Length: 427
Image 1 (cartoon, helix red, strand yellow):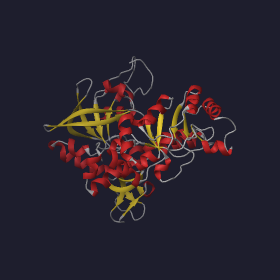
Image 2 (cartoon, helix red, strand yellow):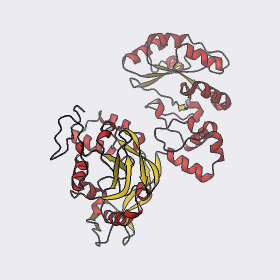
Image 3 (cartoon, rainbow, N blue to C red):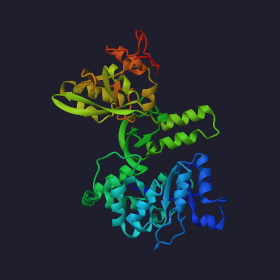
Image 4 (tube, one colour):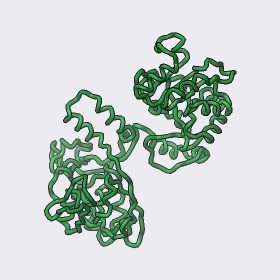
């Protein structure tokens, strides 16, 4: 993976940069490099970016005495840049105590050498800021400097998808040769998967009579407030922000803001980050077999799964609806299209339709029915869930309505009247 390192001067932050120039002018540091590094480490700094502290010119071997002294004094990660021109230099840098080596002009002027280093040392090799045309990103994590589209294309041309460490990317891996063989459309589709601002499908409130998309507040009971025209749920391609790529940073930064707890909670709900796992359930429909991936925050409750639920907008609906259930499913989808997501989440009525398919629990081997219901939204996880009615109130209400099994997992749980949603207990 190639990681781009911007130039940073962030005193007391999680990542700092020490340079020879700053010491020469005394504009930042009032102690030796070793003492300064020790002070940063004592303050909780996790990585120190060391540049040109050896005083050597590009044509001379790097003097690593400063690096050795700093490595002996601190335990945080150390990135060394300066005087690296050969593989022997890289080896000496690692031997002296650096966790990462920064390739500057070598990577820019001799990319084939850097490519060989990348193949040999992997993520321990880092590209310097000068490779990016001298642009400087200030105050942030070293990993967070975003690549431009031109830089992303260059990385793909040199090393394929393995050359980029992306926070979010759904799609198959590819080599540099495969990238070069892609059509222009294929390349554009791949680049879209790496953009922070990207085009993607989302469900909107579409009013054919008005010819526009309406906000939730402009729709009531399936009709537009202006004119009383029918409004339907429709998938449309729109520009969106890939919030999931930096959700952890947003949540972490929220803690330092002087806001009320209620406002912070609203922001957490908007960010909507969930930690969990993906699980694969084999599904059969009219003799055709599929592997359906679902997301869950409680993988340990898989033994209590008694049915699966698809969001009405999920791409799985068309694949997993049996011929015998097609008419009923289509009628239900038409009904749900008239409701906004807000109405679906706020509504107390329990509705759903059986798809005609059955999934296999990957751990128990039991067959469980696959249903379609409006309380599951396409935007959550994969748009499909495993239902554990004994320990989720929405699943419980659905199971009671359609007479589906309810299997408690928590010792002593009484689910005769309601689900036990507690996060702790003995299973």
